[in-house]
Structure formats: C-alpha cells, structure tokens
Amino acid sequence: MKAQTRIIKVLRGEIPDRVPYFEIDISPQVVKEILGKETFTEKEISRCMHRDHIVWWGYPDPFVQRQEGKNGIQYQTEGIIKNEDDLKIMDHMPCVLTLSDGRRELVKLSGPEDKQIYNSAEKFIKEKEEFPACAMVNLGIDCSMRSMGVKGFSYALYDNPDLIKRVLDKYVEWNCTIIEKLINIGFDFFCAADDLAFDTGPFFSPQTFRDLILPRVKQVAEKITIPWIFHSDGNLIPIMDDLLTLGMNGLHPIDPNCMDIIQVKRDYGKKVCVVGNIDLNLLSNAKPDEVEEEVRRKIEALAPGGGYIIASGNSIPGYVKVENVKRMVEAILKYGQYK
Image (cartoon, one colour):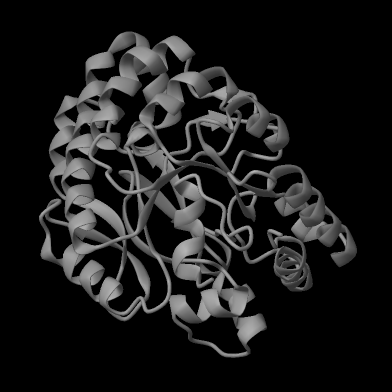
C-alpha cells in the first residue's frame, strides 16, 4: 500500500497494511545526518524517514515579542495585545508559511485572502506526488493566549473577557476563511495545532473552556470537511469530553509526560483515533534497543482493531539521538504490519 492511503484510511476508521507514521516536524539537523546533504524537500524527508505524509505550513502565529537565542533560534516572549486599542494590529497576521522554494518563514500577511498563501499551497499540492498532503492550521486558542500573554490572558478572564472574545474571534475569522480555501485546493487532511494545557491540566477551567472557548472554535471545526488531527501538548483529560465534540478524527500526541495513551484509547478509541506518542526523553537519552522496545510495546497495545497512528511525543527536535530516530523508524516498519 502506498503512503497515499495509510493515514487517511486510519482517520476514516479503516485498517491499512501497517500502522502509519505521522510527524508534524522533523529537525533539519536530524535529516541532514540521515540524508548526508544540506538541502532537501518535504518529500525527501518523508521518503528517508518512511513518514506517511508531507506537511505544508500556513499557520497563523501569535502577536508576541521575540528574542534570539543560541544558534539564531527565535523565542517568543511577551504577548503584545494588552487592550482593545491593540486589536488593530491583527489586521496584518503573522503566519508561518511554506514558501515556494520549500523553506518555512514567518511572514506578515495582509489578510486571509493574501495570494501568497494560496500560491504556495497550490504549488505544494501540484508537486505532492505519492504523499497525502497535510496542512498545518489552527483553531485560534493557543495564538489568542500567547498574543495576550499568559498573565494578561489570565487576568482578562476575570477583568475583561470581552477582550479575549475579540482576539479569539479574529483568529476564528482568519482560520474559517483559510480552511475553506485549502480544502478546495486539494489538501488530504489537516493538523490543527493548539496547545491548551500544562502537564497538570488545561490552561483554564473546564467551565471556561465550555462557555468561552468551545463555541468559538467550533465555528472553525465545522468548516473542516476532510479528515483532521487535533494537536495539543499537556493533560487534556479534564476537558476531553468537550474537546471531542469538535469532531476531529485524530488526537495528537497524547502527551506521554502526563497522559496514558493506552488508557485514552480504551476510554475514547471509539470516538477518535489516537496519534502518538514515543517519548522525546526516550529518543534523547535511551539506548536504541530501548526505543525499539517502546515502539513494539505501543504498537502491540494500540494497533489491534485499527485507530492508531504512531508518532513521537511532539515532533523530532534537533537534540534527539539520530541513532534512536533511525531505530524508531526501523521498529515501526518491523512491528507495524497488520496480518
């Protein structure tokens, strides 16, 4: 079976020839070591890693201050939106966008109709070849909180909830527009990334999520008419029942630091496909044999009956051991076959 069908089959409740491998992002540093060259395309990354998809980014970014750290890495610091007067800056949205040459850059766009977005998306789809194309999007939750800053967002929950609503509504409007257009362009599935929890639990109470957040982001979810995966780190259990009303087909990565993916499949596997969650700590610090054993254990526990896509516990960063990443991929191919 070609990569073209594996992930889509699982998201639609079917069983493919083997457990698919999904990854939001793979560090160029890791790919360089595996491929032995400096430049490469998304398709080359997926072929060498046996990843069952390619990824295009058209991801709205928060309005934040930034600082440059070691090796030129940019870090988000303080949110910029403090009051209603700051809302005007949201007319020109920062966006992590896949450019026509395949590089990803943070660009400022004139609005969700900006042709730069769709020129890039159309080129990506035209050249996807054997891979299903995943578009990285979001619902607006994480961006709203970061744009206001954790402290500002938290105070506003009590002092000025209307400001939160207006910020979130801006992202909802943006995402509703872009998602409809990306579906028409021909993406096979979406991954909507919206971190909304710490290891200890959600950023806000279940009641706040239910009353303030959920009705707004449902407007975005209702626009999605193709299979999609929802991503959030952290412990989602306190809001899981409400979260799943968004209708996603897959849930990623089911954070191994605070959630038991085996228990999540037992409790929610009839409602959503589980996607995850080989621990990054394991990929960074363990021996290759330990990585292989963890992959085997997860596949053995989660693959029967379908409803499982294997992935790392987030994405593949530059600090993991390359030999462990290679062993993870080898183990997926070795143990992931359906009989």
